[in-house]
Every structure is written in C-alpha cells, then in structure tokens.
Length: 86
Image 1 (cartoon, rainbow, N blue to C red):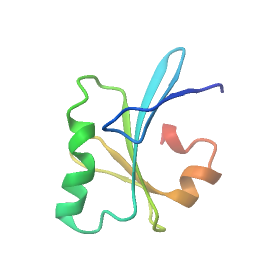
Image 2: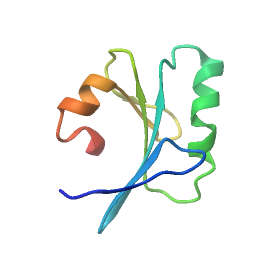
Image 3: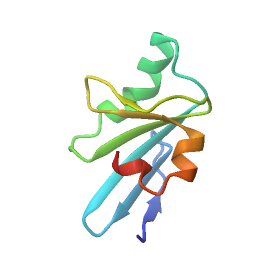
C-alpha cells in the first residue's frame, strides 16, 4: 500500500492513501494519565473520523481508548504490516 506523509505542526505525522487517512502521534510513554491527555490533545482537535494512533516507545498490547484512539508500541507499529488497521 502506498502512503503519502505530511507533517503537521501539532501532530507527529499524517499518512494518507487514496481512500484513508491516519493521524499518528508519538510518545515515549502514556502510562501517566496527565501525559496521555497531553499527547492526545492534538488528535482530539482533528475534526474528522479518520484513524488516530498513538505510538509509544514502550512495549505494550495495543488498545483503544473511549475516544477511539489506538495505542500501540513502536515494535508492533514497525513490524506488523496491518498495525494501523487494527
């Protein structure tokens, strides 16, 4: 799948293909609730329903929060070809 990448001043990266867009935020860790709120603040301001993802530097099982934001570790993000579609 070909993705194009665009950098935004508030988000780490925005990836698009002809029919889909992914907003990706990177964070060293989101284990602290205050840090998690800080990291997703920019994602919550995006006014569309495309996929929003937080990639962390720690190893973790992927999960979705109440806002539909997907959280996953960097290893899964880089090694799993289907990671952004989970």
